[in-house]
Length: 72
Image (cartoon, rainbow, N blue to C red):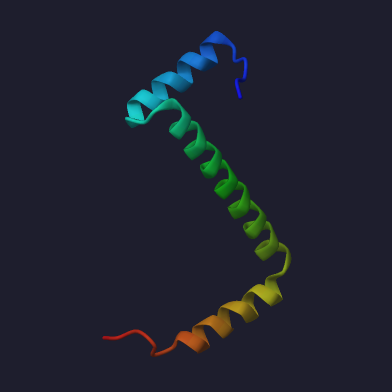
């Protein structure tokens, strides 16, 4: 699949891929993965902000289940 890009954008993508030492296709896939992760983090942050009681309960449950589980 080929996407027509403005010349300056294409040059930016090529330069960033080169700086990262990756082929352009791999750099684009990595950029898409980073963006998907950023969006997931944003949605998760919004959920925690809008559900403080559930978030607190989930945190307390996690801490209770993992208390003393790490090897010292």
